[in-house]
Length: 322
Image 1 (cartoon, rainbow, N blue to C red):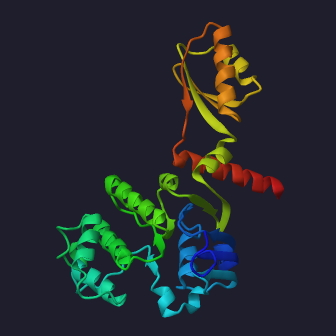
Image 2 (spheres, helix red, strand yellow):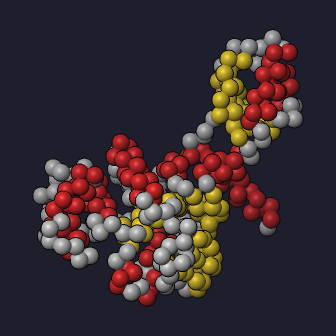
Image 3 (spheres, rainbow, N blue to C red):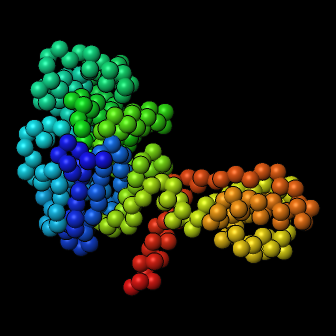
């Protein structure tokens, strides 16, 4: 979906920032469509924050190309920068101003009219800070400061949001509320680029860029990342009893089964290429052996597990190619 300038909101080619000794971001190629949520996940120090800083013009790349809203970030025009919301990794607030005054100041920077009370109240309610807005930053918790930063980033309704770990230090209930709001913004045509230390949040994104050692290893939808991690769909079968070792070997020998794992009493998870075909074949297999199959359903592995499996597979492929 092209933006008003006729191009994708974010596009990079060979984008590189080399800090030396293997630190930095290298040969980053990515294109982001309008109205999508793209998450960058990876271990600490993998280059997520450096990527966001290059995309927002905070730092200049050493080489490669980058366009954001049709312009080079280091040379944004004021009206282009006004279409962007950027929440950095660490809270930046004026210590002598209350949280409310900090939010009001952010609104004034974007030229919002003085009569902006309703907009501020809406955002204060959204970040659940109604009882803390008269505190100075030093009197607020880390999570409260992060929430004010998020409200400040959203205050002017930007078209493009860069959020660097927006839910760090936020309780799980409020974190889910934030992601629901991000989805609403995307459905309204806003574009969101987000980094997260919570791998499980990848499930909320339209696309996920998996990073390690300053490079993007793969970009795909959450469902496709699960496929890549496990080599297919995972189906969980529940039988009325534990299977013997011979039965497990027989189950794994079925052409429709790529691999299997015994995860509990009578519970087996099977990796398959065709879920519906596999369900039929395994049901017939169990019936032939007088084994009662009580349940079969798709298993969606937690993204923490998916990430570990995916990194292991991709690193193994990289080692093999070397």
